[in-house]
Length: 225
Ligand code: DX5
Ligand code: ZN
Image (tube, rainbow, N blue to C red; front, side, top):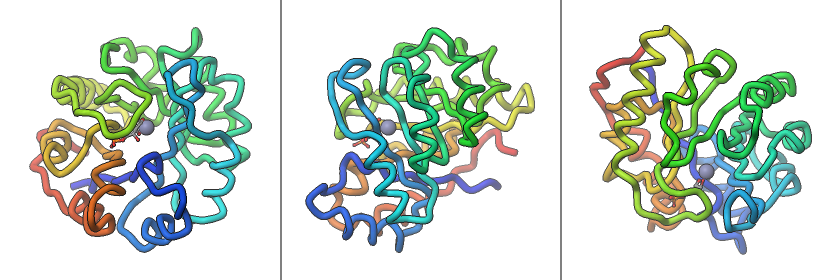
Protein backbone atom coordinates (compact mmCIF):
# COMPACT_ATOMS: atom_id res chain seq x y z
CA UNK A 1 0.00 0.00 0.00
CA UNK A 2 1.29 3.43 -0.85
CA UNK A 3 1.86 5.55 2.23
CA UNK A 4 0.21 8.94 2.36
CA UNK A 5 2.15 12.15 2.89
CA UNK A 6 1.65 14.82 5.55
CA UNK A 7 2.39 18.48 4.77
CA UNK A 8 2.15 20.87 7.74
CA UNK A 9 1.09 24.37 6.67
CA UNK A 10 3.40 27.13 7.90
CA UNK A 11 0.47 29.56 8.00
CA UNK A 12 -0.49 28.21 11.42
CA UNK A 13 3.04 28.36 12.84
CA UNK A 14 4.30 30.89 15.38
CA UNK A 15 5.99 33.50 13.19
CA UNK A 16 7.82 34.97 16.16
CA UNK A 17 9.61 31.66 16.58
CA UNK A 18 10.20 30.20 13.12
CA UNK A 19 13.58 28.57 13.88
CA UNK A 20 11.96 26.46 16.63
CA UNK A 21 8.96 25.64 14.42
CA UNK A 22 11.29 24.54 11.61
CA UNK A 23 13.39 22.48 14.03
CA UNK A 24 10.22 20.65 15.12
CA UNK A 25 9.24 20.15 11.47
CA UNK A 26 12.67 18.82 10.51
CA UNK A 27 12.74 16.33 13.38
CA UNK A 28 9.17 15.19 12.74
CA UNK A 29 7.80 12.60 10.33
CA UNK A 30 6.38 15.37 8.12
CA UNK A 31 7.04 14.82 4.43
CA UNK A 32 7.03 18.39 3.15
CA UNK A 33 6.32 21.97 4.14
CA UNK A 34 3.16 23.60 2.78
CA UNK A 35 3.55 27.33 2.09
CA UNK A 36 0.51 29.50 1.41
CA UNK A 37 1.18 32.52 -0.79
CA UNK A 38 -1.73 35.00 -0.85
CA UNK A 39 -1.95 38.24 -2.82
CA UNK A 40 -4.94 40.09 -1.35
CA UNK A 41 -6.68 39.84 -4.74
CA UNK A 42 -7.45 36.20 -5.44
CA UNK A 43 -8.10 35.82 -1.72
CA UNK A 44 -8.85 38.57 0.80
CA UNK A 45 -5.70 37.87 2.81
CA UNK A 46 -2.02 38.66 2.19
CA UNK A 47 0.72 36.39 3.54
CA UNK A 48 4.22 36.17 2.09
CA UNK A 49 6.09 35.70 -1.17
CA UNK A 50 9.38 34.55 -2.64
CA UNK A 51 11.51 35.83 0.24
CA UNK A 52 9.79 33.48 2.67
CA UNK A 53 10.17 30.51 0.31
CA UNK A 54 13.85 31.37 -0.03
CA UNK A 55 14.26 31.55 3.77
CA UNK A 56 12.49 28.21 4.27
CA UNK A 57 14.72 26.66 1.61
CA UNK A 58 17.65 27.48 3.84
CA UNK A 59 15.98 25.98 6.92
CA UNK A 60 14.91 22.58 5.67
CA UNK A 61 15.96 19.93 3.19
CA UNK A 62 12.44 18.55 2.91
CA UNK A 63 10.42 19.49 -0.19
CA UNK A 64 8.66 22.86 -0.28
CA UNK A 65 5.04 22.60 -1.38
CA UNK A 66 4.03 26.08 -2.54
CA UNK A 67 0.32 26.87 -2.81
CA UNK A 68 -0.18 30.03 -4.86
CA UNK A 69 -3.41 31.86 -4.07
CA UNK A 70 -2.61 34.68 -6.47
CA UNK A 71 -4.19 36.11 -9.62
CA UNK A 72 -2.35 35.33 -12.87
CA UNK A 73 0.15 32.92 -11.31
CA UNK A 74 1.96 32.75 -14.67
CA UNK A 75 3.66 36.03 -13.73
CA UNK A 76 5.63 34.44 -10.90
CA UNK A 77 6.21 30.74 -11.63
CA UNK A 78 9.93 31.05 -12.36
CA UNK A 79 10.50 33.32 -9.35
CA UNK A 80 8.98 30.79 -6.98
CA UNK A 81 10.93 27.97 -8.56
CA UNK A 82 14.15 29.97 -8.19
CA UNK A 83 13.31 30.65 -4.55
CA UNK A 84 13.24 26.89 -3.94
CA UNK A 85 9.73 25.54 -4.58
CA UNK A 86 9.63 21.82 -5.37
CA UNK A 87 5.89 21.77 -6.02
CA UNK A 88 3.99 24.77 -7.37
CA UNK A 89 0.20 24.63 -7.19
CA UNK A 90 -1.82 27.43 -8.75
CA UNK A 91 -5.57 27.94 -8.78
CA UNK A 92 -7.80 26.85 -11.64
CA UNK A 93 -9.88 29.97 -10.95
CA UNK A 94 -6.90 32.37 -11.07
CA UNK A 95 -5.78 32.03 -14.68
CA UNK A 96 -7.35 31.88 -18.15
CA UNK A 97 -4.80 29.29 -19.26
CA UNK A 98 -4.61 26.36 -16.88
CA UNK A 99 -3.05 24.01 -19.43
CA UNK A 100 -0.37 26.49 -20.42
CA UNK A 101 0.53 27.39 -16.83
CA UNK A 102 0.81 23.70 -15.94
CA UNK A 103 3.33 23.30 -18.75
CA UNK A 104 5.12 26.43 -17.58
CA UNK A 105 5.46 25.02 -14.05
CA UNK A 106 6.82 21.71 -15.30
CA UNK A 107 9.23 23.52 -17.63
CA UNK A 108 10.55 25.44 -14.61
CA UNK A 109 11.54 22.11 -13.07
CA UNK A 110 8.89 22.03 -10.34
CA UNK A 111 6.05 19.55 -10.00
CA UNK A 112 2.79 21.10 -11.18
CA UNK A 113 -0.38 21.19 -9.12
CA UNK A 114 -3.77 22.70 -9.88
CA UNK A 115 -5.81 23.84 -6.89
CA UNK A 116 -9.60 24.08 -6.94
CA UNK A 117 -11.93 26.04 -4.69
CA UNK A 118 -14.81 24.27 -2.94
CA UNK A 119 -17.29 25.36 -5.64
CA UNK A 120 -15.21 24.09 -8.56
CA UNK A 121 -16.09 20.57 -9.74
CA UNK A 122 -13.23 18.10 -10.24
CA UNK A 123 -14.67 17.23 -13.67
CA UNK A 124 -13.30 20.55 -14.98
CA UNK A 125 -9.79 19.13 -14.66
CA UNK A 126 -10.35 16.16 -16.98
CA UNK A 127 -8.49 17.72 -19.88
CA UNK A 128 -5.42 18.76 -17.94
CA UNK A 129 -4.78 15.69 -15.79
CA UNK A 130 -2.04 14.50 -18.14
CA UNK A 131 -0.19 17.79 -17.71
CA UNK A 132 -0.08 17.85 -13.92
CA UNK A 133 1.41 15.98 -10.99
CA UNK A 134 -1.21 16.75 -8.39
CA UNK A 135 -4.62 18.24 -7.74
CA UNK A 136 -5.03 20.30 -4.59
CA UNK A 137 -8.64 20.09 -3.47
CA UNK A 138 -9.58 22.92 -1.11
CA UNK A 139 -11.79 21.77 1.73
CA UNK A 140 -12.30 25.33 3.02
CA UNK A 141 -12.55 28.59 1.12
CA UNK A 142 -8.96 29.71 0.57
CA UNK A 143 -7.58 32.66 2.48
CA UNK A 144 -7.37 31.69 6.13
CA UNK A 145 -6.29 28.88 8.39
CA UNK A 146 -8.43 27.42 11.14
CA UNK A 147 -11.71 27.15 9.19
CA UNK A 148 -14.30 24.42 9.35
CA UNK A 149 -13.87 21.46 7.00
CA UNK A 150 -16.48 21.24 4.21
CA UNK A 151 -17.66 17.63 4.25
CA UNK A 152 -18.81 17.49 0.67
CA UNK A 153 -15.15 17.61 -0.31
CA UNK A 154 -14.80 13.93 0.55
CA UNK A 155 -17.04 13.13 -2.44
CA UNK A 156 -14.81 15.22 -4.67
CA UNK A 157 -11.74 13.31 -3.56
CA UNK A 158 -13.46 10.01 -4.31
CA UNK A 159 -14.73 11.18 -7.70
CA UNK A 160 -11.29 12.39 -8.75
CA UNK A 161 -9.59 9.26 -7.44
CA UNK A 162 -11.93 7.12 -9.52
CA UNK A 163 -11.09 9.08 -12.66
CA UNK A 164 -7.34 8.92 -11.99
CA UNK A 165 -7.53 5.17 -11.40
CA UNK A 166 -9.75 4.52 -14.42
CA UNK A 167 -7.35 6.40 -16.68
CA UNK A 168 -4.29 4.87 -15.04
CA UNK A 169 -2.72 8.26 -14.29
CA UNK A 170 -0.13 9.06 -11.62
CA UNK A 171 -1.72 12.30 -10.39
CA UNK A 172 -1.71 12.72 -6.60
CA UNK A 173 -4.58 14.20 -4.62
CA UNK A 174 -3.78 16.78 -1.95
CA UNK A 175 -6.42 17.96 0.47
CA UNK A 176 -6.14 21.34 2.20
CA UNK A 177 -8.25 23.05 4.85
CA UNK A 178 -9.64 21.94 8.19
CA UNK A 179 -7.84 18.60 8.00
CA UNK A 180 -7.08 16.75 11.23
CA UNK A 181 -7.43 13.42 12.97
CA UNK A 182 -11.22 13.75 12.93
CA UNK A 183 -11.49 13.53 9.12
CA UNK A 184 -8.12 12.24 7.88
CA UNK A 185 -9.11 8.60 7.77
CA UNK A 186 -12.21 9.29 5.67
CA UNK A 187 -10.12 11.42 3.31
CA UNK A 188 -7.48 8.73 2.90
CA UNK A 189 -10.13 6.12 2.31
CA UNK A 190 -11.66 8.33 -0.38
CA UNK A 191 -8.28 8.52 -2.10
CA UNK A 192 -6.28 11.46 -0.75
CA UNK A 193 -2.50 11.07 -1.03
CA UNK A 194 -1.32 14.24 0.73
CA UNK A 195 -2.86 15.74 3.86
CA UNK A 196 -2.18 19.44 4.46
CA UNK A 197 -2.57 20.30 8.13
CA UNK A 198 -2.18 23.78 9.58
CA UNK A 199 -3.99 24.34 12.88
CA UNK A 200 -4.27 20.64 13.71
CA UNK A 201 -0.47 20.49 13.80
CA UNK A 202 0.95 23.86 14.81
CA UNK A 203 -1.83 24.84 17.23
CA UNK A 204 -1.85 21.48 18.94
CA UNK A 205 -0.13 20.97 22.31
CA UNK A 206 2.39 18.56 20.76
CA UNK A 207 2.86 19.31 17.03
CA UNK A 208 5.39 16.54 16.45
CA UNK A 209 3.06 13.98 17.94
CA UNK A 210 0.14 15.32 15.87
CA UNK A 211 2.21 14.77 12.73
CA UNK A 212 3.09 11.27 13.90
CA UNK A 213 -0.59 10.45 14.46
CA UNK A 214 -1.58 11.79 11.04
CA UNK A 215 1.14 9.64 9.47
CA UNK A 216 0.10 6.56 11.43
CA UNK A 217 -3.50 6.49 10.18
CA UNK A 218 -4.26 3.33 8.31
CA UNK A 219 -6.99 3.29 5.73
CA UNK A 220 -8.27 0.36 3.79
CA UNK A 221 -8.50 2.51 0.75
CA UNK A 222 -10.72 1.20 -2.00
CA UNK A 223 -8.40 2.22 -4.82
CA UNK A 224 -4.68 2.49 -4.68
CA UNK A 225 -1.77 1.65 -6.88
C1 DX5 B 1 -6.02 28.15 3.43
C2 DX5 B 1 -4.67 27.50 3.19
C3 DX5 B 1 -4.39 26.30 4.03
C4 DX5 B 1 -4.37 26.57 5.51
C5 DX5 B 1 -4.85 25.33 6.18
O1 DX5 B 1 -6.27 29.06 2.43
O2 DX5 B 1 -4.57 27.08 1.84
O3 DX5 B 1 -3.19 25.67 3.63
O4 DX5 B 1 -3.09 26.89 6.01
O5 DX5 B 1 -4.98 25.60 7.53
P1 DX5 B 1 -5.92 24.70 8.45
O6 DX5 B 1 -5.34 23.32 8.42
O7 DX5 B 1 -5.81 25.37 9.77
O8 DX5 B 1 -7.31 24.76 7.87
ZN1 ZN C 1 -2.78 25.82 1.32
